[in-house]
Amino acid sequence: MRLEGKVALVTGAGSGMGRATAALFAAEGASVVVVDIDEAAAQRTVAELATREKSFARACDIGDSAAVARLFAEVEARYGCLDVLVNNAGVGQVPGDGFDQYQQRLARRSEQLAAGVEPDVFTDMIVDLTDAGWQRIVDINLGGTFYCSRAAVRLMIASGRRGSIINIASLSALSGEGPAAYCASKAAVIGLGKCLARDLGPRGIRVNTICPGPTRTPMMQSISREWQQALERAIPLGRLLEPEEIARTCLFLASDEASAFTGQTLAAAGGMMML
Ligand SMILES: NC(=O)c1ccc[n+]([C@@H]2O[C@H](COP(=O)([O-])OP(=O)(O)OC[C@H]3O[C@@H](n4cnc5c(N)ncnc54)[C@H](O)[C@@H]3O)[C@@H](O)[C@H]2O)c1
Image (cartoon, rainbow, N blue to C red; front, side, top):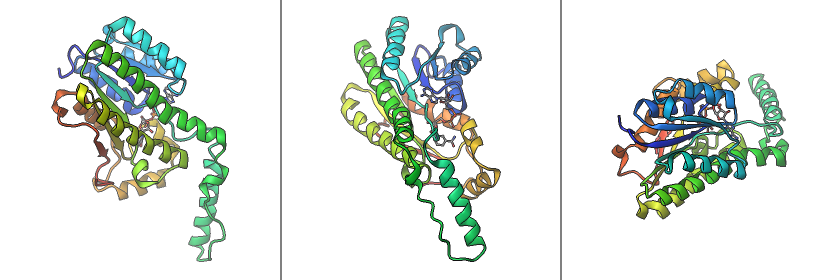
């Protein structure tokens, strides 16, 4: 029971690795605030927690600063403290991100290459990325991490807790493979985490970032079976990660066992990237 008596908040906990993390934290004794933009999904997660009586679910768009402030006011009223924040909620694709057009051009270029002709089609990912598409991805992946971290730190300071903040970025932040707004926002999450780790270290608040590799969650279902197989071949362990493996990495960073770790970037990626 490594998190007995602790209060944890996990964003995007209605699905995938956030859901697995909430379940593992509860199994280790934590009260868990399960946050997701999808209220029904958040409720389903809470219903399965070992600590469901002392946990609760809340619908919140973490890209909305005012909504995040209301969420943390409720956490303060209910528990008076916070020990662990997992900034997990994130999006890879939104309307207006130009990814469909990019994929069409990529397919045409691949056909030309396969046919042995000099390709005259280029992928040009950025050309169809609209302001709105860029802004929404940045608002959620980076803005949400900022809004939640700020509110969590205020609460950790007020309650005198030596907390742990865990950001979920992505291997894409390091490799540049993925949609432009996604790679950029996830890379910024790493920078924000390092800055906060340096600043908050003297208070005993630790901040670390996990870069998951391709992980078997609903987010992965948007890519084709062939693409998944290509990813598996590129991973030294020869398989996609499971959400429970990311959850165990979060548990390590949340627990006192990681007392030496702050400002670190951990690639939980089956060896796909070696830092
Ligand atoms: N699956 C992968 O291969 C992979 C790889 C690297 C990084 N990641 C990152 O891991 C995190 C979790 O991804 P996952 O694969 O479990 O995805 P997922 O789609 O299964 O879960 C993401 C959850 O976040 C919620 N969410 C989306 N926007 C939100 C918002 N504005 N406010 C609150 N909640 C919101 C969704 O409703 C969903 O329940 C994401 O940050 C993602 O970018 C995933």
